[in-house]
Image 1 (cartoon, rainbow, N blue to C red):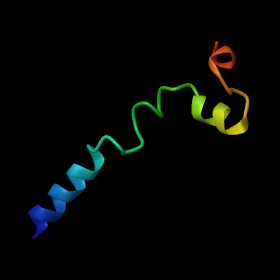
Image 2 (image 1 turned 30 degrees about the vertical axis):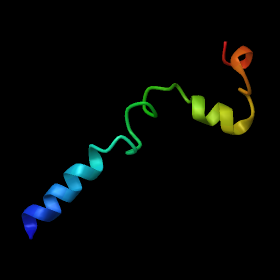
Image 3 (image 1 turned 180 degrees about the vertical axis):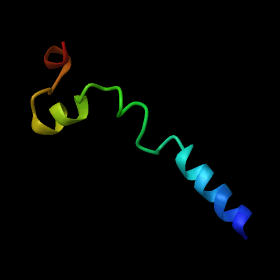
Image 4 (image 1 turned 135 degrees about the vertical axis):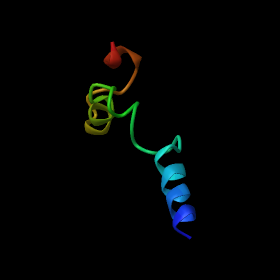
Length: 45
């Protein structure tokens, strides 16, 4: 049972939907989009 729990935990943190990587290196882009500062490609530039 302990091995199964460890495997489930490992699969969870290696899943592509786990909030890491892109969020860590996006320089806050998600925040700017949410706040309405970036609305299109021109705003992104």
